[in-house]
Image (cartoon, rainbow, N blue to C red; front, side):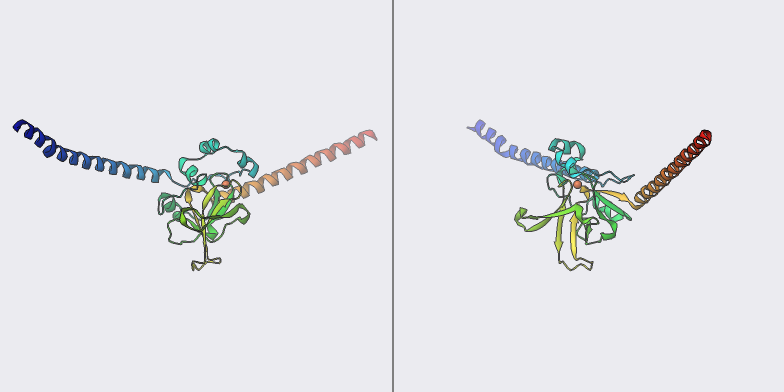
Length: 233
Ligand code: FE
């Protein structure tokens, strides 16, 4: 009987204590791992900055892409938001980058279509990039969204159907529209105004060179025609 009591004491007296310690340790490790993963996710979820004006896809090209092809083209964060209607966390790394950006345009990270610009950007203090209007209205479309037991209006890219965020009306913002396009920064690509200006300048120079070449070509051709005429005389 004594021997049995000792064993019971070992089982019920010490084991729970070990289990408690083990459980606490597992909790600390899980918590630490969670914080590490969260921090890593936040580091990854930046907004790409274009060095040249991106070439947009057509609706037809976008519609042809399979889910697997989208996965290959996008980062996991972009895929989650654009193709699976995900939401980035508020006040994250991408939002900090957005707030620090100067003038420029915001293109769809999925299909490179221009959607918003810094001219319509405003600080709504909601923790996500906010615009009072799109810069290219035809490139943005909306849809009723009743998910999550809420009646909201979803905002999508009209070219690739990528999920961008939601739009809220009449919240009392002192903007020309009192609309808040609450957009996931991860779904966007920033094109700084200097890049747009450089592209415009390069296009003008290219046009001027083409014109010069055309004029030079015409001059040569008219000279040769004139000498042919003289030769014929
Ligand atoms: Fe798009």
